Image (cartoon, rainbow, N blue to C red; front, top):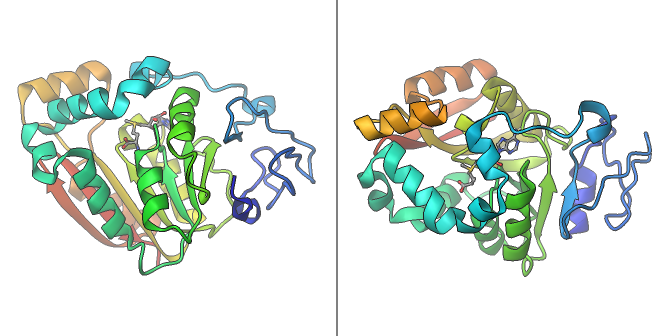
Length: 270
Ligand SMILES: C[S@@+](CC[C@H](N)C(=O)[O-])C[C@H]1O[C@@H](n2cnc3c(N)ncnc32)[C@H](O)[C@@H]1O
């Protein structure tokens, strides 16, 4: 695990900046918290002592905690859901996940900023791996709350010395203010209990001039999409609504591109 992550961490319990001096036996110098090493290659910063182990509220999140779903996620689960919720044209328009990776990498502007980069709610690690390969000189941190997803992500990114995986909650990010040059956040807004809190956390961990790129689902055009979203309790975001929301929180320069009933957005922290 790249020790370059040490200065940008903050303790999930006491919020001390740079709490650990060693990633092999991490112990917070301020409150003594010792993160558990549940998964090889993942720093577990869910603080069970305070809030207890989080329980997956939604059906979708329970599935995200399943080993089977994590293993088949990129090849089967993700394309099927994108097709159902965003229409068959959405994936085809960009060539599936590889096209999305292309859009996200270029929207973040990997060549224009030094990083570090955060892939928020990284799932099984496709974006972490792509970012780590595209920006070999920069630190890339993948964060997710699901152990099953992180286990797959750890296997997939094992060869990338600049990639670090953290288990944490998007509503309370275990990083210092201004830690990142960019935050990537693909296909996860609908999964959060409180998106407002997540947006505020993203803004906090971005340095001035930092970029936030995300993707999510707008209102589905088809009946199948509408019914699937309703059955799975999946929240949709209209681009206009998201633009106003992010501006109110203090982001600037909102842009988006529609991919069927999904869209990728980009904003800047002034
Ligand atoms: C639909 S997947 C998207 C994964 C990946 N970003 C992609 O585009 O393929 C949503 C991810 O959000 C994660 N997630 C849900 N709630 C979270 C939270 N509170 N904090 C961090 N990650 C969360 C899930 O575990 C899951 O891996």
